[in-house]
Image (cartoon, rainbow, N blue to C red; front, side):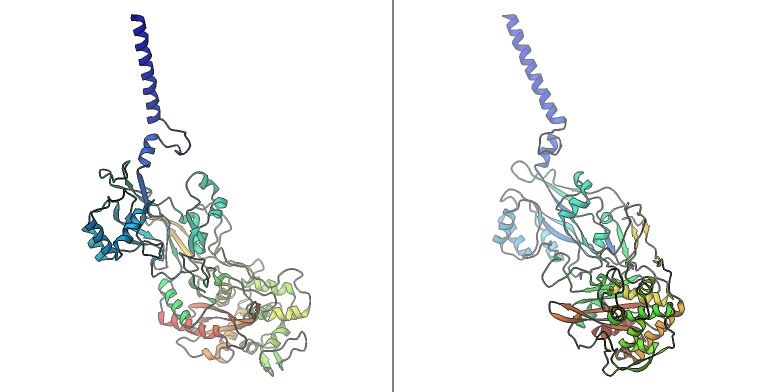
Amino acid sequence: MRRRLTGIALGALLAAGLLIGRLAWLQWMPSVIPGTNGDHWRGESVHQREKAIVLSSGRGHFTDRHGTPITGETIQALAAFPVRYGTWGTPSELEQLAGVLEVKQDQLLNWLSQLKEPTFWHEPGSKEPLALSPRQLDALGQLQLDGLRVLPYERRYRDDFEAKHAIGFISQHPEWIADEYAGLLAAGRIQLDDKIGGAGLERSLEPLLRGLGGSVVSHYVDGRRVPMHGLDMRVGQPGNPYYPLHIRTTLDLNLQNQLETAVDEAGLEEGAVVVLDAQSADIVAMISRPVFDPDHPVQSGTDWANHALIAQPPGSLFKLVTAASALEHGHLHPHETFHCNGQYGRYGLSCWKEGGHGILALEDALAHSCNIAFATIAERLSGEELLQTADRLGIARRVGWATEQPLKPLKQPLRLLQEEQAGAVFMAPPYVRDGGQLAQTGIGQRDVRMTPLQAANLVVTLLRGGDVLAPRLVSEIRYANGQQMMSLPSQAVPSKEGQIAPATAAVLLRSMKAVVAEGTGKAIRDGLWQVAGKSGTAQTDGAAGTLNHHWFAGYGPVQAPRYAVAVLVENRRPHENNQATSLFRTIMDTLAQYDVPSQ
């Protein structure tokens, strides 16, 4: 009997030991049961009762050249966490809360009772948290409500922020994440539903802007979903003082906003305006129309594509390239004259002026944009000569700031303007099949394509005597503590074919002065600054039939050039006056009134 009792006792002790050991294993060792994501059971028990809300994504921000914020605004917003029904507060307190939020009490209760995840209060029809007013904040401070807290929330784009195509937008792109960030996705450092850059600098600088993660607030409830007041709320955020990054752009935000107002008042519906610093080619302002909403980029009647970077037929603006090519290759003397009677005599080509211009020197032919003179000049050239000169002037190639070698922080080359199109002179070899193709190409039709950015940069190139610079949109990147991470200095983008002679550039600049003094741009002679430039009108065929693109590219003030500007007004009806010319004058007058020294 004694041996039997001893055996039973030992068995009971062994079973108890095994049970205690198993419990210890479950408490202290990692679990591999599917669905726990490798957490400890203890962590899982807490996680089941923890609800978190994101206060800040940790994404880097943009400023303009003066340090004025372009993105990022912290507001005070009301956060609500899912808790047991009826535990928010007394009926009287909820009535007061509804009054503060200016909604009906049953609407508020309906919203609270349906919460599955923490969220911020937002006005009906909006997905963005409501920014509480000082009056609302004072009133909420008098209420003690469970599961409801006023928290600082960082909005990416301000309420009064007018979308900038150069900056772009962020949105959900699961297909891009799966393709471009497979490693980060597998490591759990990024999720398929995360927002990433969709266009503009938001996309080209995405690897830097993404940062190290955001700031969250956790709220704890017990098994009955009643708030655990002892734990209250805890803030979790990356402990790295270097992030988020701050990107200093070359834009002048105040000037950009003034120019946007000016182009909208002028009625620009489709097109673009590019303003470059005449000395450095830095992008001071870049405007594209139609507008878009960065929070809802794909909407009918809007367009998030940056028209400043889309290549279009330039029309007579390309005559600057044709003249430069003929001068550079010895097919044209600066003082040569041409006779225009209105008809070229072949290819069905005629001059825009009925009856012709009569006898014209080269500068007069440019000033009055004579098709007959430039068809004559173009037929003297070979396709290779015209291509070579275009390349020397930064045409038919991407000229925006970029690196050929990988940048150390990115581990890959960087191109600031990823959407920039190269444009073209001829679509494909053989470049010239007949004289008619050359004649049409010489006046900026046929296959010729140019972006507004290239047009503005062409003016800078001429002002610099043929030296081609890369338009820059970002000047430096700094860590959150102010330390510089990298500088993006101005850089040249010379052609492998060399550059045009300063004397050639001088001839073209004199001709651009004559355009405004007595030629196709004489309607804009009067203004705050004396300006110079070249107009262009290009036919384009679309669903609505034949329409015209209006161009004007130039600089000012003539005496001491500070800005190079290109204006494109798209899809205008035939026989309308060149709207880009008058808009150019508006832009220049706005720049003159702004009158801020170049940075």
